[in-house]
Length: 318
Image 1 (spheres, rainbow, N blue to C red):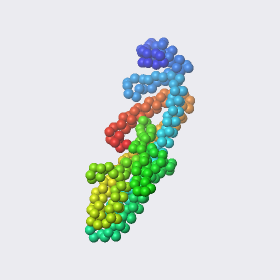
Image 2: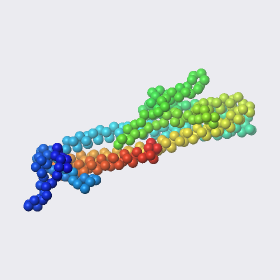
Image 3: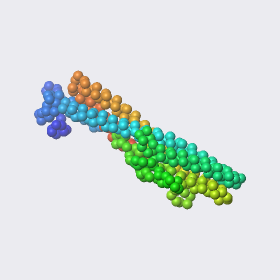
Image 4: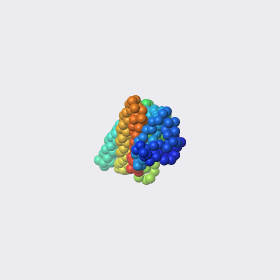
């Protein structure tokens, strides 16, 4: 046993008086660490033995509680901001999916051989409006004024050429992870490339805005090429729609993970409150022993949770 600089046998065999005796060096360690002759004991959570500690551990435990309270406050603030951003992003993704569905309906109508060039020109006008609305959503902001789909960029996610109207992604390719407690992190949103960029049937990189602009131009040109362009656009729009629904699924899993972590933080706050109340107990030895037991159980729980959270399935969800 190791305690307060002492390492060796914890108890001598019971003597004539039928009681166990601490070895002299151990008694000195207890006295030095407890301002007296009090030894706090608790059963080890894993091993078949006792754990001993003195009353001098109280400031250390108090400091640990203070530290946990500060960390929990930071984690809560981070999680609240992440939840806010993901809620705005989720709402935007729903609107984007609806607009793509409408664009596909228009493309299907334009692909019909009975549709006139005049009707296709009208369809092109509506597609232009949908593209403009999509760009508005792509450059949307959350409640804090931060770009929803721009990653870490300060400005808009997409720059729009004033002459050609072409949209170029101006954000960062990734979004910084946010600490949400117990060593866990989460990506609090999506980038424009996560949502709008994809590969067309020919294997070329493109995005939803370029494809809608191309389809609109072809429909205004009229003729047989307009119907062919509309038919090709159906496949492209399906790919774009799949990209958005995948983003919705990923975001939904992150929001569920955030909810799990939020529940654990609530439990942690309640536990800290209970430990604070335990510290005010009348019997110092009983108080310290119970507090140490609670802290030990907490550490074991946190370690188990971290191991679980690092399993492949949970990692994929985040």
